[in-house]
Structures are given as C-alpha cells and as structure tokens.
Image 1: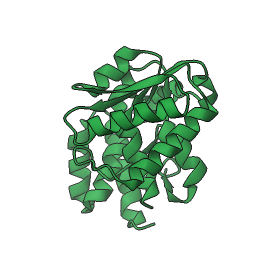
Image 2: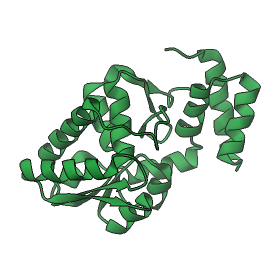
Image 3: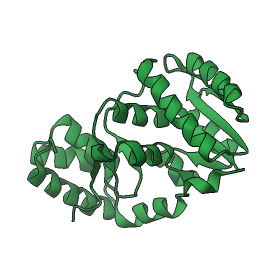
Image 4: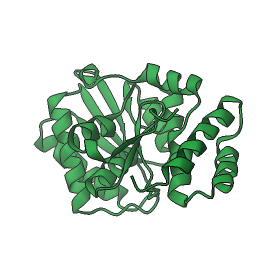
Length: 222
C-alpha cells in the first residue's frame, strides 16, 4: 500500500462520521484533506469511496449478481465502466468502497484516450457478456468526451461479431439516458446508483476475477 495508512485510516473514519451527520461530501473531503495533509489521490479515495452506513446499505440493496442480467435488458454506463477497467489493466490501485462497489481514483474522465488498453478492457467486458448474455445490451457514452463516437462504432461491431443483441450510443446526458433506458444498469456512479432500481458492478466483477491484488478494501477500516 502506497498510502500513509495511519493518517488515511483516521481520515476515512472522520469522513464517515461527517457524512453520517449530513455534511456535504465536497466540504467534508476538503476539511479532512486539510486536517490530515492528504495527497490529491488520498482525497480522491475519501471523496469516491467513503459512504455513511445508511447510504452504503441502500446502494448494496440495489446490487445484483451477474446471473441476474441473463435474458434481461442491460444499460451500460460506458466511460464509467471502461475507465475503471483500464485503471486495473494499467496496474493502478482500485478501491472496494463502503457500499461494496469497485471504483478507480484515476480522475481521467473528460480526458479519455482510445488505446490498446481500451481494446483489452472491451474484450474483458464482452467475455463477461458472453458468459451472462443479456436479452439486449445498450452502451452509453457522453458525446462531449473525445473518442466517444469511435468507441460506440467499435462496440456496435463487437456486438455483431459476438452475436450479442444490442447497440452503443453517444448522448449529451449520459446518466439520464442510462436511467431512462430501463432494465438493469451497469455503473458505479453514485448518482446513477441512487436513482436506479437494480445495478450491476460490471467492472467490479471483472476486476475481482482478474485483478484481485490491486483492490484496496476500505470497508475493513473501522
């Protein structure tokens, strides 16, 4: 572990305390970062991974297992899933958060670049979909992010090649489109999780199978 665990452990505990008492997430993260002189990446762990018990429980209640997507409609939050997987493929640490979801702390959204790593991540996703084939799979990508059109085109071809029913779309408001599509949602975005009925941690399941050693579990920090 590359982090100063004593300071980070105390910061995580304090963050849970403040959030459980209604403090704003950003304000709480800023205060604790200053108090413990945390690095930018340590702050990202606080902001993305720490949840008060009641919110963590609500998220976990919505989690479904891979077998639940078989013959069901699956809506995939494209960049969220790909960026998390790419972090693991690059050997970067990922976090098993208080709510049980796996999240990255790379903060690369908006600066996405299509690469060979992207192709490897897509291959892992499609292997997963072949094992647990949905009735229909729809990928959504934010149109304002670079390479979103290229990604959607590539995915449509892969769906055809793998004989999986579905499509890939670029949209202006990704979270809204994912939720409106209905079915089971694949995402670790807390905003989407809060509004969805059923959520698959697609990237998380793949990471747990192939990159277990990269996972930092903060749920065990009490």
